[in-house]
Length: 243
Image (tube, rainbow, N blue to C red; front, side, top):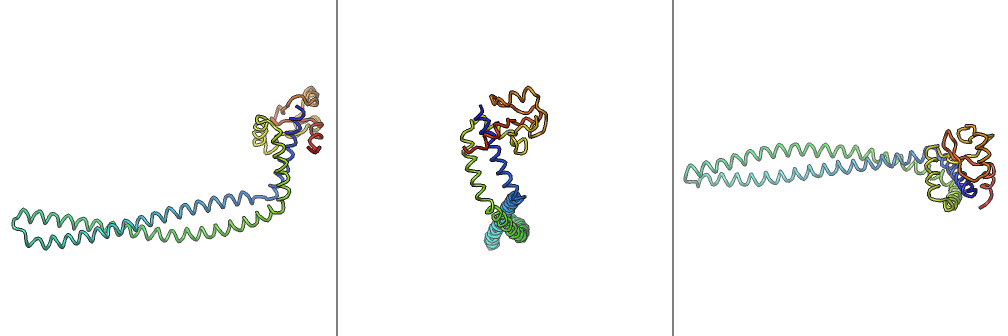
């Protein structure tokens, strides 16, 4: 049990160091992520509008081709009017011509609408492209700034990441899950030492009997108020020694 507590506290120290290195980067990581998400959203929007424009132009061209076909039929029907022999044939031909004319009028209106949609989409694409270019520029600036800060802390981060891998390898899966759960809930501090008879996380007084038991390092104790894992001074000293 003493080793378990020692490794958990050592992991906490490592994670605290990593957290401090991340804090040196300020809001840059979050800003870069937000800019990346915004850029991706604008690019998706651009693709959707472009697809809409292409579809409108395609439907317009289809309508135009259909109009040409119908006009050719109208010319054919007109020439056939002189060849009909009965009123029935004449009426049937007239109906065909009327239907073709109505369809042409409908398609011409649709073409006008589709042309308007496509033109509006093309104008919107130009606006979106400007937004994308600005977003790319801002993102590149933030990435450059973040890379510069990361370069200054890179060696330390690599060192602590390596130490973390070694510490995690010594901790059971269930204990690691509990540690990570508490750490998420308590702003990064899952394991804390007892300071002057109180929890080092929330400063709640630890009952004298529990203090005596805790110093024996024979089981894991958590703070009754905040739920953090609390460890004795001996565990703290043991965690400082090279592993």
